[in-house]
Image 1 (cartoon, rainbow, N blue to C red):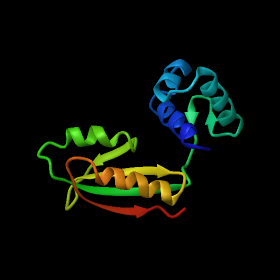
Image 2 (image 1 turned 60 degrees about the horizontal axis):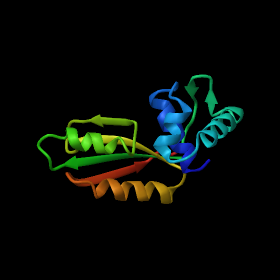
Image 3 (image 1 turned 60 degrees about the vertical axis):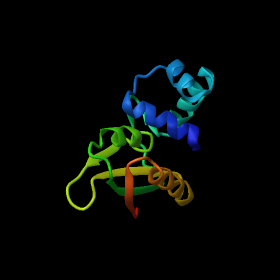
Image 4 (image 1 turned 90 degrees about the horizontal axis):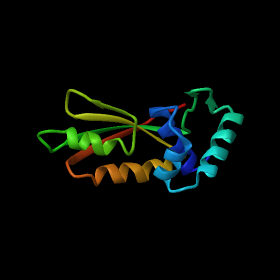
Length: 129
């Protein structure tokens, strides 16, 4: 699986009936590319009907502090990195489960999260499978 497959899966997680044309436009690829990849993902057992049964090889729980009074804008930006985002109580303000294909990719995503306006600190724990 590569980044394009990962992006297709994330779109289908949000709406498993999303059209291949929409997904293709969103990713900047052809509809045929999306169709072929979805067929392959189904053949491999990642996509089962309208349910996605996928567990990323690497998952990190990223907790972060927000310097913004209203964290709604930051929560919206974090949706680029995760579909599992939660406001939390305590020392940190937000938690996100970030999926990646490997540690290097997870580190890149965490670096990009740290660079977001309003992020004043992070802490990451890697899920052990």
